[in-house]
Image 1: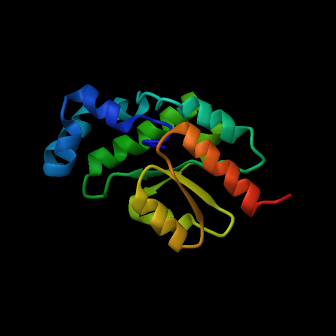
Image 2 (image 1 turned 120 degrees about the vertical axis):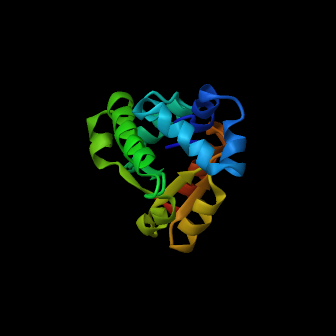
Length: 162
């Protein structure tokens, strides 16, 4: 979801410039600012450029589409609660009730638990893709919408010949 459909980095920079630098250098400061922004940080997050196009492409495919999205770690209790509530609100508003109900919200480290031979993960995090593929799934590293759609088309041609 974040970095593929929603613009997490852009939402962070709306709070204050250099937020992503804090994420790398001062996680406590970063998460305090995100937590202070409340549920709205997550529920009002803007679409990624190309996110609506990618969703439309995926939604019209013959595959079951599920949203798998990472949450803050449990020790950041308020941020975790805000993220859960906000992401579900975003999904309900932008993609509909069915996607909100079926969404899998988990820790980043738990994403690969949902992998399998016929499951494809689109993610902007290389580590998530590696873990997903190690667990038997097919990964697509998202850099931009056109590239992701091209990669999905190749996967469909090579892996899912009907």
